Image 1 (cartoon, rainbow, N blue to C red):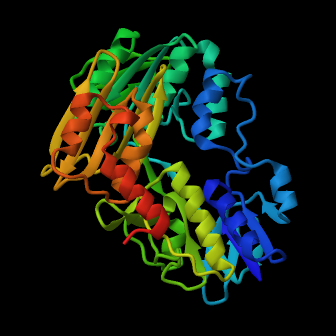
Image 2 (spheres, rainbow, N blue to C red):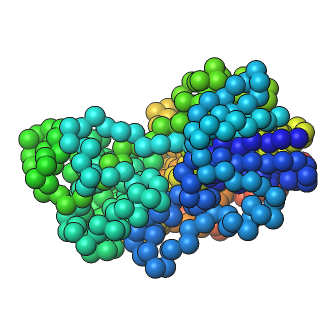
Length: 416
């Protein structure tokens, strides 16, 4: 059996492990378009904050691929011929396959800003981009970050730790608009502002001047030695579209990670998987999901029938010593809001019909596991139980007893 994997990220590594769990001898080839090996993308901000301490951010070492008898080809995949089951590379080579996995991941959104093509305007998504910023950092005193999502926040933190002045621009009315509801976002912003961050909300960049000034929609000019565009990511769908696979916002797959072509699978950031909370397929580009999806896809490519049972949207972030975690359907307007907090901690719960629909936890890490399980397993707590938990103060000892009883039942007998 010939297995071909396009991409060399976390989903690809999971797929190798899944294939080898069933097929010890099949031929596995990975197409590494980035040509940098399998590294942990979220750690590029740690590399930028301390290059000596984080010089090695491999997700899997070269030895892993040798031990698993995987051939890694540093090239770009250009064209899939599903009828002939053949992949064409940018160097002209053509590789045949029995099973193909698209683990092509995402790429940064490129904003149509005049002046964004200048050398001192960067993305912050690849190790190479982090290295380019590191190489030029001696020239940088003032940095402007466009976008306050996870990537923008970690880029800002890395530069702040290197002693640079940071200004964070966000076009929405709050920071981390996809990860936090308004209350927690304001709580975190107050903390960051006290640390010296200049956060500007409700503004957009309209022009980046050659004389190192950033012009906003309000016509305000901000000096900048470095601009980082962190406006989100989009899945890399070019190969899927060229192969005429079914595509929505991501590649459409079944519960076994098969695409509309039975010999082509997809996993990771590029694929739409089931969101347990909404009950619909969605893009859920998260590191733990990527490995799990790749592993299951690899198992199924090798002949197992291992269905994906879905997952939940969850984000975890450590920022200037604070732990921020959110999960579930924070946007559910029909859910009741429960909140608790003090000067350095905050917890918000979204409750609907005695079920936990979503939460935001800042500096209360001990309850994150149970709250996540309550959403994932749809554990119903008797009326008043969540209110009692939050009124007593969020801690493991105050988690409703019904939660532990139901979790034991699920672990013993499985979910319904």
